[in-house]
Length: 552
Image 1 (cartoon, rainbow, N blue to C red):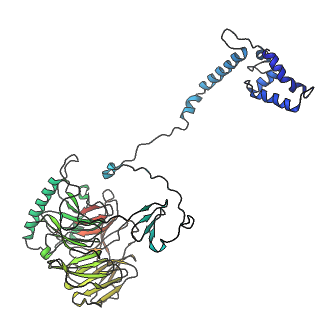
Image 2: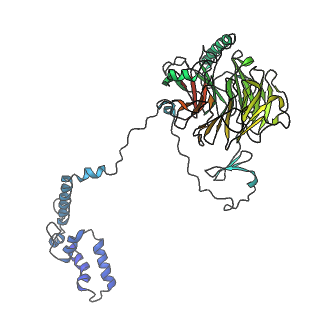
Image 3: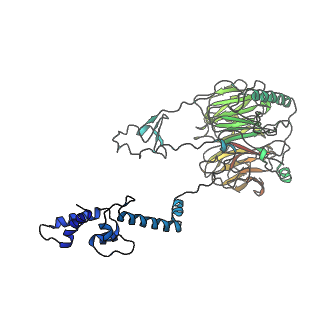
């Protein structure tokens, strides 16, 4: 049967309706066969119906011609190829193919610049998505852990009182094992090598040894000289000294070696020789910064000693240890260690023989540094953690403490079981610091979360401060609270600011005296400050572990 006969047989029910034995089903089947046939377009349907087709369409004669030519194609196939060629030529003339190839292509820009230690980082792969958290009730788990839950994190994991963690997927992570250095800790740095450690110990021993033989110089640095000299921050005066946020820092009293000591949240102590010449990055020599794992937890005190501790670094931490860096032995010597206490504040007396140590539950301990023992039982002087303790330079029998919303002045000779403060200075919110003026005048500087720095004279009035300085102290969650300090001579009040400044105020009037900043080199909020006793230098520590030294 030819092609013509086959098409005629298919179209017969469509033309004649349901004549003869044809049924509606047979008509529908025929139409389906037409639709499924390879003949495309309306022109093909008209050709099958025997109607006249427009120009370029397949005619009935072409459809009837089923003979294959010399090129191996039928007349219908030749006309189809001609149509395809004509359409392709039209598309090429309109440049449609090039335009369609560009659609959906995403242009990638240059990668963001990563300077400093950021260039050494590698972006970590995102953790796999965890299943949606479901409550214990929905998972049909008995609430036997309710009494032992410490807190719940944002990701849905639950931390138990014993330190273990339950994750949303049901997995349990045991509490991390807390480790701390025990006994004598040698000066073996975390970032140096044996050669650099040995060279630094030799330099420290030589210069500190010579410094200890000299007479103690009077404080001669003043705010007026700082303002006159117009302190600046240079690129070489910025260094990352500790891995985590700076909690305490202090200048060494020795002028022959400008040395800054700093402590961080994880128990590291950083020692930075500011004036050490920095060589090329490819040089294996150190850049003047070495840090050590001297403690196992948050550093709560880091000051260069006085009296018998002159030329030594005095530190304490939440790991319950008090240590002294002795340059002669080249190690951090453990003065005392308590498994039951977490020391939150510390200060030494001017003779260097004894110290006051406070913990995070409001207890005060008196420590004899010569024998490494507490001289008496601890005395509970506050209900909550003691943030700072400071001995008055003008009166070694009294000291001040700061806690939740109270600053108190105590007499060390009257520390009995039910000891009462000599003066109480209530604050509306948490008081983060209370420091006596170094000139021995008896003025007391406090920093409070109620956005105020206050100067008190407890001997005159403990109910009203002599000066109140308005200051934004809302540091938030990720920045350590501000702790305003006195200038070395006591003629100024210094504090960091939320605008990344170091501000200086007049302690008698509260007026602003100076403001130091550097948008290029200090890009974080400096919450902890230190002043040099004899040189007009100011050091500012940030939450990134960096220390910035402003000098003329």
